[in-house]
Length: 157
Image (tube, rainbow, N blue to C red; front, side, top):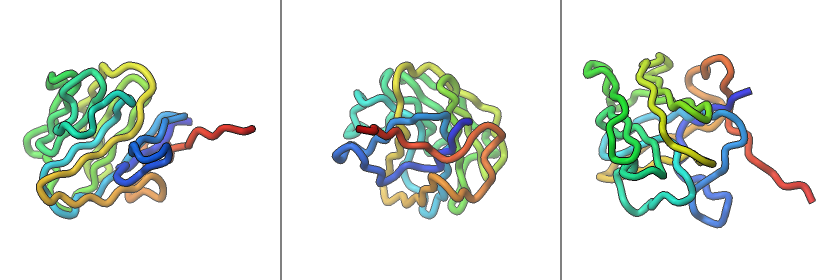
């Protein structure tokens, strides 16, 4: 079963890096409360979280607030011009270990992006007074078939 991640702001399970390894295929959802500069996607542990916007290198694949999906400083795809997220919209993403897909208010935007390799983690960044509410379970919109909440990896001693 795949997993659903609906925004990953404030998740610190590994000592404060803000990264949670993804065990299954995730979906993430965020509610845009106040627009500013933001992005959502997946990244490896090597991503520089202090250099935004993300998507500038091979270590992150994100959708930015302008609707563009970036990886390795290359625009991989873009939301339709009439479908840019507005204040109060719910943005969802799914990642199946190959392709990142974007949903706006529960509707698939049909603008997939790929290219990132290795173990990835959900990532969200904000700047310029942006406020985002994030959901990892109990989503506003039902995730697409095959996706569910993030399942966290656990070690058993």
